[in-house]
Structure formats: C-alpha cells, structure tokens
Picture 1 (cartoon, helix red, strand yellow):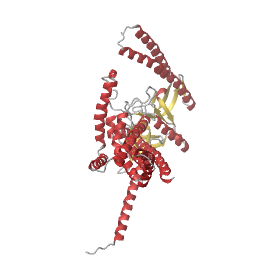
Picture 2: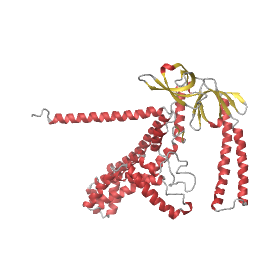
Picture 3: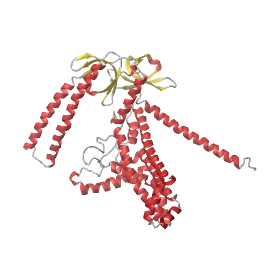
Picture 4: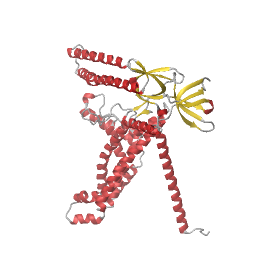
Length: 518
C-alpha cells in the first residue's frame, strides 16, 4: 500500500500536534492559576452587605437578615449562598436560598461587618458604644473606646508575661527540686500570685465595661465586648479606592496573623514562616551532600558496574513515593536518632521526648533525602558539561585534582548546581504527605524561632502551607470563608515557590555570566 504522505508532511503533522498539545497544556495551567487567583482574591475583597427578606425552607416563616451573598448554582434554579447574622445565629452562619423565595434585596448601608479576634464575623447595625457610659455610635467614639480598651488589655498582658510567667517558672523549678509545699519561698510566690491575679481581675472588670451594642435586621439587639472586636467596617459605604485599602489591610492581616476558626479564617504567618524555614534548612543540608556525591560519581568513581548501579539507584530514588520517605524519616530520624539523642543529652526531660518526636529538623532532613537525587543528577550533568580542555589545562599548569575541582570545575558547573537546587526547592515547598509524619502539624503553639535561647529550636513542630491547605480544604469547612482562604493560601504557596525560584535563577544567571560568558 502506497504511503499517501511524505516525510515532510508527517513531520509537519507531528509539529502541529505537539504545538496543539503544548497550547492545551498552557491553557490548562493558565486556567488553574486564574481559578486560584479569582477564588483567593475573594478572601480579601470586601463584599457589600445586603438586607434580605426570604422564606425559610425549615420553618416556612419569613426571615429578615443582614447578609453577604454569592451565586452558588445557576442550573436548574438560581441558588444564593448567604453568610448572614441574626439573633439566633449571630456569627456569620451560612445558608442556601433559592432565588424564588427571596422577597426583597436591598443594600444595607447602615450595617457593618464586625470581625472578632477569633475570626468570627457578624453583620449588624451599630447602636451604642459604652465606655463605660453609653453613647450613640459614631466612628470617633468607637475609636476612642478601642484605644482605652487596648491600653487596659496591654496592662493585663504585661502582668501575665512579666509577673505571672516568672512565678510559674519558679514554681515549676521548685517542683523539680521537690521543695516542700509549705516552704516560705512557695508561700511568698503564692502571695505574689494572688496580688497580681487580683490586679488582673480588677483590670478585666474595668475592660469589660467597654462594649458595643448592635441591632440585627429584625431589630433584635446584641452586645459585644470591645476586647473581642478586631475591626468594624461599613463595607457597603466604601468607595472603590477604599475597598482596595481594606483589601490590602486584609492581605497584611493574612500574612501576619495566625489561623483561626479551624484554619478557615485569620492569617497564615506561622505556616508561611515554617515553610520558608524548612525549605531553607533543607537547602543547606542537601546542597553540599548532593554536590559531593555528584563530584565523586563524575570525577573519582571508576567507570565500572558498581558505579553504574549507584547511578541507577540515584535515578530510581527520584521515583520513590514521597510517603515512603516520610515513613523512613519517622522510623530512622525521629525514633532512632532522636531517641538516642534524648538518651544521651536530654535524660532530665525523659520520658518527655526532646528530639525523639517529630520536629522541623527531622522534616528538613527527610526532605533533603527526598530531593537529594534531583540535586545529584543536575549537578552531575553540569559537571559533565565542563570542557575536557579546561581540566587538561589546569593539570598542565600544575594544579592537583582537588584544586582543579574547586577552582575550575565547580565554578563552571555552578549554573547546573543551581538548577538542581531550584528543582529541589520547588519539590520540597509543595510536599505534604511526608511532612505530616515528621513535623508539620495543623497548629503549632510556638514558632521554631523566638527570643528564647538558643533562639532556633530545631526540635519543635511547625506549620506548613501545604498541610494548612490540605487540612482547611478537606477537614475544616466550618464557614463560607473557608474555601476562599484555602485558595488564598494556595496562591501564597505558589508565590513563595516563585520567589525562591526567582532568587535561585538570578544567582544562576550571574554565575553563568561570570564563569561561562565573562
């Protein structure tokens, strides 16, 4: 049978098919990125508050509420998702309502979005501010009352941190030394504790006098302590530029605060900090080991079957499922190495483990082993690209093998090394499964870095953006803001990987210009 197409036509078809598939892949990637950007931006953008009247599907009665709305479904019927507040459910509850049961919708310019410190949200009309006398609500009175309340809260926190914390530390030390309960030193500490506790109770009573009274759409009233309020915004009155200002404020809160409401509100600072710290530690660990292994395979190892087996093993390590590395890290690093370190150096803390429990150091080591094949392969490829003439010239000038490697081969191969580091960073920043076994947790009370000696606490557990996204997306859908926050965290994770890669690419470009061009 005669071939109906020529070689040139077949080549053209193959090129066209490849271009089509690449275009489709690019469109899919752009679509995914746009979805993450649009859904994530919804977490920061202030939505207007509406006053709605609708017929409840549960009781059949008409309900009047302040709510923020979003279109949930378009077929077969238009369904609205409401995040609303009323006397029975004050804090941002959600409901799905068919469009045909909505009796009226109008903009509620007099209603405010009141966000609490714990992440909960309330939509209501402010009535009075008590400070401690009651006054009609105004922005100036509210700001003044918040300043007074904040000063009282700072006094309370100062007493707890500077006075009560020191008393607790001394009492714990007495417990370790088995000091008698009736000892004069204990009695003195108890007296100091009682004094400062009484002072805190008096300040808290004074602070509780500062309140905000609000009214819901059905005119029922509700009183909030000012100490619980983080922000109050009349979002329906905001201009376009003011909305941008609120959005940037929300971004600042998102980047600087801790997660709240089961990881569906608040910020992601501990997870962002933990992700960057873990990647930084992993990079410090994996780079020298990866480079040394590649140098051995390329420059020292004999060309025999054993070396070929090593190269095959390194390549196969890149295909091992990441959860296997997590199990290895838990069994070897945490239980074996960590347990032995506790037995040798931290016997006073036993049976409570110090290093014999998942922590940021073990997570960094596990991720270093996971990404080690990537660094080795990329570095070895870079070493093989070094011209043999340069090596021969270095040897001809009297340089030893070690000097040739350090001063000639490695500088020229540095762009390839940076390529491996870039790939390792991208891989480590997005992993979730192994980290959940060796140190990453849903919530960590303390950061791995603080002002307490030795400042960097490698034994502590940490939060990670990938784990936060996984937990929030699948286990913590407790309010309507949960999904947008997860998309916002996804966007932040992409930004972190992008920034780290950009830094590595800039370094690689400078190294290439220095050693290959100039």
